Image (cartoon, rainbow, N blue to C red; front, side):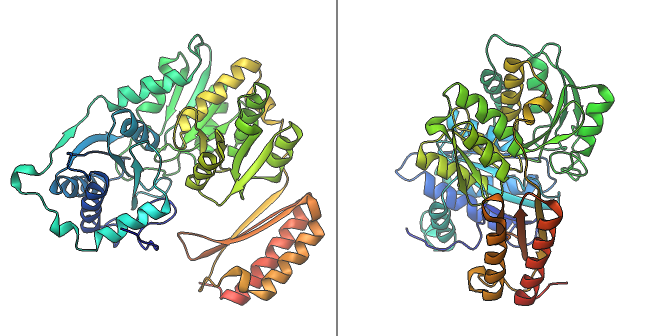
Length: 456
């Protein structure tokens, strides 16, 4: 079945306010049926993993998707709360036909989402998501119901967390421990609340754990990667060597150095890529990042004899470019870091272990390592718009952007795009002078508001 357009699926699965269309149990059950049908064709009884984060609504979606899958004759493997990359790992290592993640990542608890991994642990390409979406409403599913003797069953896999922890520890050098290292780990009351602290403790670190008391409604609430203030304060309070904060599904991480200063994904990519270049481990001497990554990262990689390839915003597009080009490391400024030699998707804990490994090899603190990249001033402004007219068709806006790009020359960048999930336009300007680029960004915002209409 071919389908060219997706209405339910966005840049990272289906997402919305829980119990409001499309994030309803009715849609979730339909999706479960379509996933089972799509991934278990050929007469065998399929096996599909379902995992989730700690949101209150996760219970109902877990049951709805599971019911849909079982109604099509496939079996369900329930792994409970587990980071998104952990679910990808279990899907692949258990030879399941697919994996379903119930999570809205960094969003507040009222939201939820559903994303799907193929049997190899990689997220689905747009075309496959479109096929599944078309299948949900095609009528084909009603013609494929098994009889009562052939419906599937759901089984809880209690050892999934332990399996994932063992895998994570294998990523760290076998003969090294974290003895003598003090780490603040903020799990944001999300999916890593058990796994995160356990990994570092089992490797020997002294762990100060934050955000490890989920109640269904406090995920990402003033905690985790989007709110690193608590982590930074705890690093200073307890004299930690570093801090790491995960988002709700732990596929991204933001760090703090020993001074309690935030170290974002761009700086971490620079740190890890520099070591990989020196060791000849960075395939094709190329790092993959999105259009949002700082110009300073590109200059640093180039200065070390490497190359930066940019993609659209979204870790799935980073991974697709990596697989297409044969690269093995990439990520986003926001903290999605993808080490394809170890994991098929962004993994905050894998990223933290890689950083700790570099610190151990270099015998240098995180702040000194992060200083290897000189960051260009960057301004990012978000504005609500009434309509999303194609930016390339807005001639006054395009003329202004071109004029600013000429002024910046090779010392800056301009990026204007619409949000994929909200009625917003995002304006990013980089350059050598913070005040100048702030003025440029505000000019573009005003031009956009005139062209698209400013939403209240």
